[in-house]
Length: 177
Image 1 (cartoon, rainbow, N blue to C red):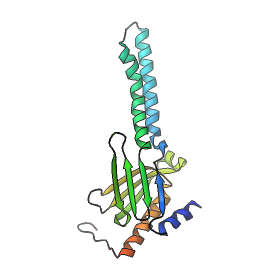
Image 2 (image 1 turned 180 degrees about the vertical axis):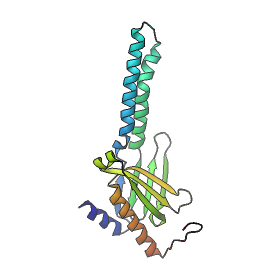
Image 3 (image 1 turned 30 degrees about the vertical axis):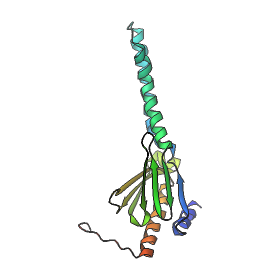
Image 4 (image 1 turned 120 degrees about the horizontal axis):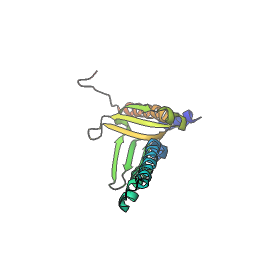
């Protein structure tokens, strides 16, 4: 059923929205697990050092275990403030927590789309799209946390080919075959 939806989206008019949202927050799962483990280990180390009679300054007692959680919160916030829109004509990426960046690429400039899903990402239904384009400013686009990455890859490739055919644009490779 989902495959039909993406096939349909790839062939419809150029103002139809194919994807409008943020990456899946679960893309941060490995970092979350590492940060929690690091905070637990730091807390155990602090308790061990304290039980030996050493007196640690209070900033060490607070900052060391809280540091990994700050890193984790920043990364989750960065993911939450990333917004991707893929319509029938272009891909637009807006992101950044402290510094806002906006970039877009016309779909007819897309040359290749690769979908990468690790074993745990496949089970949760998302992956990373790696998009190669002929855009001089942004030749490589990496979109982590995209739902149904393989279906989205197929739809983007088909839509890029359809747009190039409709505009009469042909690829010309210089130096690569």
